[in-house]
Image (cartoon, rainbow, N blue to C red):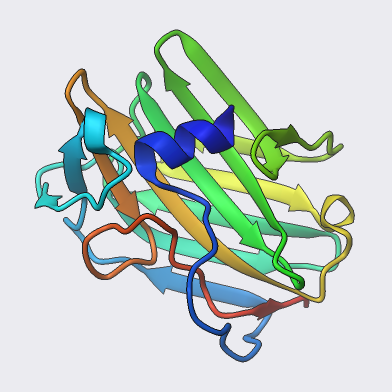
Length: 194
């Protein structure tokens, strides 16, 4: 369900094009542009979201801090304001050697809610130690994924996205994108295990 919802509503977690960059250090920090949220009509959310929404604060990603440790990958995402409590999506995609993608995500929409780790279209991964916490007071979402659940990869590439929904529009930010949102996430360079 998470993968399908992300693909339909915020166009998330599809392989980014281009060759991966060289391996980076075990820690990676990215500062995203402020006021770069885009919106589009709900019925066409799979298309590029083109309309700038500089006043949207709750899903405006500001910083991403990634630590690829020996036993876990930790991703901390700070937004300009708190992630909404209703009709939202926040996701962290981890691309591994060989191309597999795991997605840690939480959403609440149309009476459904989820907080889980998935791979493939809808394959939930049972993973002891996995968590995705939204601390609205601090405006920080933290995803923790044990490396044993990922097959102990030597490196990961990370993508981050957030969205909120109204009856007619979706407002979304790709935390690593510098232009209008596309139908796929932008990923970091390879982040080697520390």
